[in-house]
Length: 146
Image 1: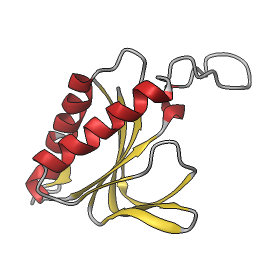
Image 2 (image 1 turned 30 degrees about the horizontal axis):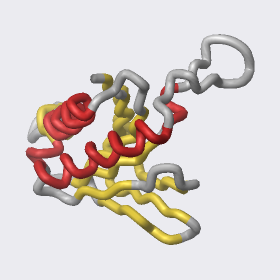
Image 3 (image 1 turned 180 degrees about the vertical axis):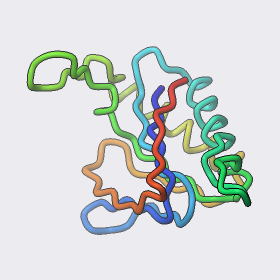
Image 4 (image 1 turned 90 degrees about the vertical axis):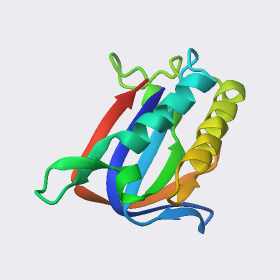
């Protein structure tokens, strides 16, 4: 499972012009789900996202986690993260889980985040044509895999 996280001062996802998820300071995470992924991996990714130290401490070092600052978490499904781009001029998507497997795993991740995080948890909608807007803080972006 892939989590491409971006530290943000704000982020939102809209569908057909309607905002379906919004956070202020926190992490906006694009999630890529592969065929070998499981519910345990979805929960492990959320655990890692909440504990990953990407927010500055008093000395300006990245020593604080999302949990430490009680920041927002915006989860957005994105199968294109699993694309094979090693050859040619068109990506291949064999590395992405099929929707009937990926959607329940995305929902597990969202439910787990709601259950264990005291800050705002929001999400995009699986399979929807979404527009994502964010202000990347830093910029700080990391690719996490579990």
